[in-house]
Length: 177
Image 1 (spheres, one colour):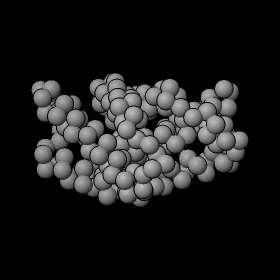
Image 2: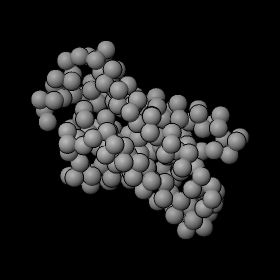
Image 3: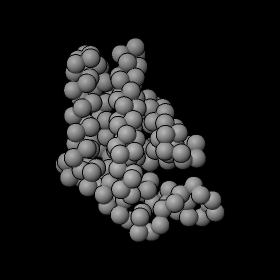
Image 4: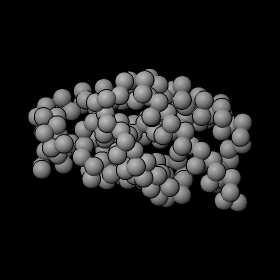
């Protein structure tokens, strides 16, 4: 149990580090009118390495950090990341998918999250989102192109991080599932 909690802490911390890097990259790309929306990136390590309860808690914390750093209404991403994870967990059996199918899943999850954010901003009658339809589509296209290599890298990063910090954690997580 203690090892699974350490695994949870390591993956959640890697999510926080990646969100910070995305925020930094967005601050650099912002003056050129580009916003990377990569909220669909965080599902795969949770399917592979954590049980359902720890994954849900990690995604809720990750969603709250996304909401805070990118000035979304607090709870928007936390709720949706948890909901998408919970619903898709019943249909997603990791050992049976090819890398292409895994990317399609992450790209589709990212598209759903971005579309829901766009619709929320459109119908909220406030300045919660300044996306026009052209800006939404161009940012989503650019984000999807960026998501391809980043999704494969992030899974390898989490695996490498776990192997270096605590190699026994991977055996424990595999036995608990």
